[in-house]
Length: 383
Image (cartoon, rainbow, N blue to C red; front, top):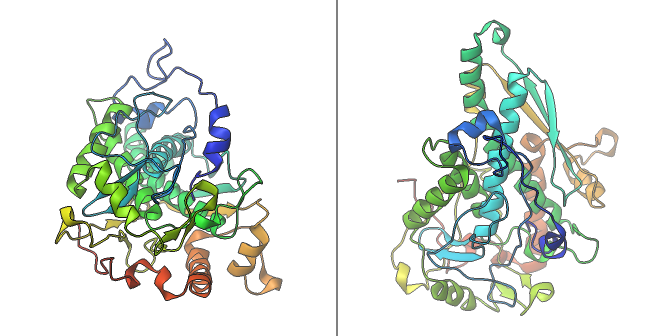
């Protein structure tokens, strides 16, 4: 799971450097309106954050309505942990913030490369060793457009690329952890891979980021804080006590263990939007404060804006982790045709089928969120 143990080990060592961005005087690059960042960019990749499980165990912090102020760079006013919402179940605010910041960062990266006519760029997490390659095909008339037309089109295309790349990257990290990835070479993150709130939290982070980047009045950190609070209200966020109690009620059934390195999550949500383009949250029907609440599903990012303007994109993941051979063997069943890169558009469905088969073998049919009577099966449409 996304930086659960990695951040706890190396996050303390991370040094965040202030830089210049919208102003000459160092202000961490975020004093301008969030909408300007698409053009100006960030000064550094998103920072590492501490993580926790969705379980009522030692190391998990449960939060209520007060989530503090978002900070792309370090801020003591940001609050991170696990919340419970009536329409989205448990949501990992750490995952959400990480996905949001990577989305924003990749939007600005995409815009810069589009304006330079670059056919390729790459990126990757510091804690993973995979390299994400992005290949861009441009429309034939791209060079003939005026600077203003190119900038306007590039912004629209970048705002589609950022969430797509970020969501794909976070999903890949979950796949890595399922196959036993060890961030610092000590303990595998498998026990929490695809836990019941992960993908939904990651996806929501991309949505929050895009909304924030459209804010013409507030800085990026302020815009994310506002968008996050608004969406938590929409989802029906509950108190920290309710969030903790909801998790405690499924102990022994959805998870076992009492502390960080001794927790095994048995309830997993493998919905990454492959079947219907939506991700459905895992919810408990035992939370009295949320009686009759319907789940709110979110659409996964798509590249329709690229097709609209005559662009096309291919993302390839080049794994360098110890687990790469096992994953590549699943992606390419025929050894003679095996390659060294993963094409998410082609291979994620095959890999996820394998993951779900392994999950049933290990945990039985109850591993699936929608099989449990305490979880809603049908997703409500966005309202």
